[in-house]
Amino acid sequence: MDYFAELGYFGLFVAAFLAATVLPLSSEVVLSILLVNGLSPIALVTVATIGNVLGSLTNYALGYWASLGVIKKWLKISEEEFVRTERRFAKYGLFSLCFAWVPIIGDPITVVAGILRIRLLWFVLLVTAGKLIRYIVVSYLIMQVN
Image 1 (cartoon, rainbow, N blue to C red):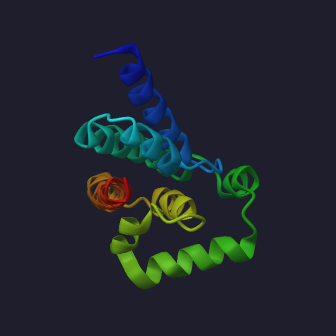
Image 2 (image 1 turned 45 degrees about the vertical axis):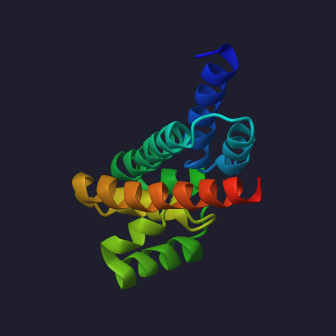
Image 3 (image 1 turned 60 degrees about the vertical axis):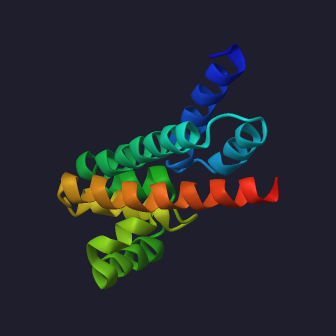
């Protein structure tokens, strides 16, 4: 594997990890660049999914171990926004975790899952499924355009 590929996979992992946290980043841009430059779609989807799920696990851990006051302050979530996220989670249940990839609502969902002490197995399975499908679809669309 050449240096560009190694750096690309590492960069995608970091971008995907950070994009799953509260930082306003997009791993899709990095994924697109690497796909256009001929790196393996399967390897890219795998690396992006792993990085993104680990970022979501960081949010889960924050919700699990931090106090609610610290979470609201750190995430800059208003009481209203937090209550809306809690209601959304209660309404859609565990399957709302499949949408942890959705901008704006995804990060709070993963934090609330930690606060609610959702079983880690269900968290990992559902978050991974949603993120994997998203990266597959994005990769497919990018490859169709090129």
